[in-house]
Figure 1 (cartoon, helix red, strand yellow):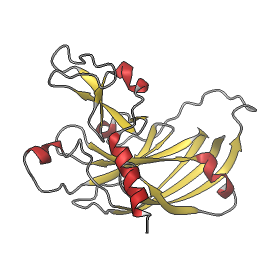
Figure 2 (figure 1 turned 60 degrees about the vertical axis):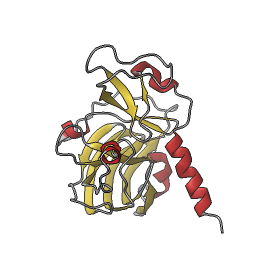
Figure 3 (figure 1 turned 120 degrees about the vertical axis):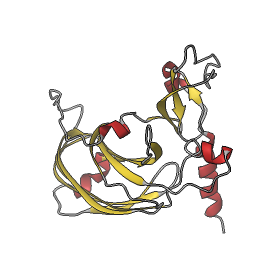
Length: 235
């Protein structure tokens, strides 16, 4: 199902945000105190950035109360991605979640607002309110020409890298500064200085770009999160 119409999304607050293992690699090496984040949230519709919140300084439980309104053409999903605003280089990925438009079909044109906490992976929660005004179409029944989507892009350079999710891993392109073996095929990735590979922002494993979709091993950090959730639910 695809949504065509008007989307109003309000991001309230986020709780329990934590730096990933990858972003804490220098903290572990130099025995520094746990990192406090400067988080902001990027909003995407079908992998196209449509906006982002302001950055909140030094907090792992930020409050935003910011609203995003836009027209959507053949929309399938909304992604909310949390990043830590770093002073130099790429901003650090923190967590993300996706919301399927078809899961919101009951609220379309009813005047009702979807509101609630969305679980972020690998850690945290975000509170959202979503209102849809428009219609849903069946992919099989309706064939439409691709519509070119143009959205305002502010500070795009900070989130230029795409998140590739495979079996719990969250791969992002990164430059490698030393010889590195591919987690999947076990061959060298690094050939010349500055070779680019895909690195999981959760467990830090590295793969060739050509290998990232072939990874069948579930991210060990995601396994741990699932185990902790099950344990927490026991009496």
